[in-house]
Length: 143
Image 1 (cartoon, rainbow, N blue to C red):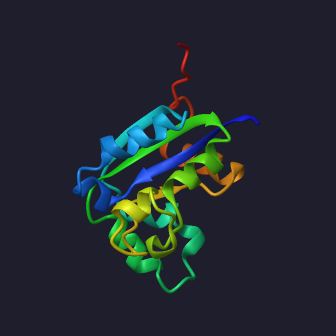
Image 2 (cartoon, rainbow, N blue to C red):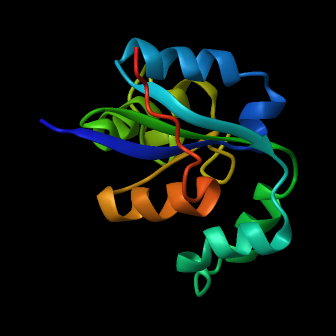
């Protein structure tokens, strides 16, 4: 196993439902550490840029609109196998297919409003963390 970082976003529906503490608690209980965090309201340019990989997909415009509909919590998490662990805690993208006890099974209303986002691999994680936190935005845990 190796220590990794991953990006985690609590989406507008999760923030609206006041799930920030509950979600962070699940990550921390699983051994993930928060090394950067910020609440923000995404601009159109930020949402389009972040989800540019999906720009040719039919759901892209709705996704951008949804991600701009309210504030989000953007977090960099760190820990052993952080990417896989984070994705396991989140559950399947479609909450109907998510395992019991996962964030999406417990809190998501639909595949469109599924409470959280997480990086899908090491390269994506590095790009996504840099997108939101740039150089020096991540604070190493020293104790």
